[in-house]
Image (cartoon, rainbow, N blue to C red; front, top):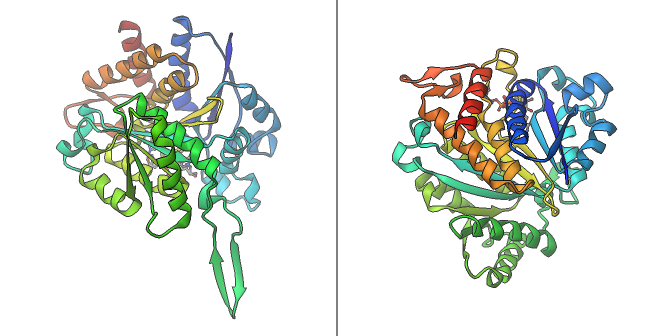
Length: 359
Ligand code: NAD
């Protein structure tokens, strides 16, 4: 059956990088991938056209799609909007919420060719390949009650860290399944020495473990996990954690790889419907210059093929093509080094496409 893909270029460099990723998607179609691709507006671009960051038309297209490829949203031109519900990020959060995208997959991979770009010593990060599975729709970012109120003559801010067993179980299953497909090691990160919500988190992970006897489950407190990530990151295979800890740890892990322009991500719901996007933002400082790195977005297409479209062979082909282009010494400005050749966004797209066809 033909599956629908929705491409949402978004703002800033979004249109430039999704244009290159769409070329790779078209090359996959030419090799038999049975998908129908359409485009939509999200974020600032949608606000400018329709007065809403998530127009009804885009939401309907998103609901009908098996997978969404997003560039990025946001930029200074919309930061001044006083009505916060009209801000570009609200469009992104709206899609996540409406589609119930609770499982955020954030790989942190260091390509050997780029190990020197990391802030850690190359030997600590060369060959790094971690998958952080972050719960995305629950936890303290959404818990009620929340607010700022007057108590005993002063203002008090408060939030609620809450997870139900079913929420923990469904993200746990995503992580165990992920570990199964990789090195079969899963580290669950919590703060069970202090927070009751994460005592429950640990209990549920333990309860699931016997169903996955081939996966080795371990637990780590989040403070230690932060330390271990910068001390010896290669000890991790799959990490599973709640929304807030995952937010912080996945950004730290991303920086270990040396370039945010290289990292894809996926957000999935229970039926495998997913949104795929680079980890970086809309980079307004370089938008329109044709110099943005399209590789994170191209690698997001590979994740889409693997996790929503069941086409792992094409996914590997894209990843192989990216590796080959890096081997050839081609780099966009953000990852350029002394002995490399700096290319534009489109030239990088050309090179990946050529490598994809040649493999
Ligand atoms: P950013 O990731 O957009 O940019 C940070 C730095 O990295 C900039 O110097 C930028 O030029 C560079 N950079 C990012 N991606 C690059 C790429 N592909 N190639 C080359 N260089 C790249 O983060 P920011 O500056 O904090 O945010 C800019 C805007 O993006 C804001 O409006 C923010 O809200 C938005 N944002 C959106 C998303 C998203 O859509 N998922 C995520 C983060 C930030």
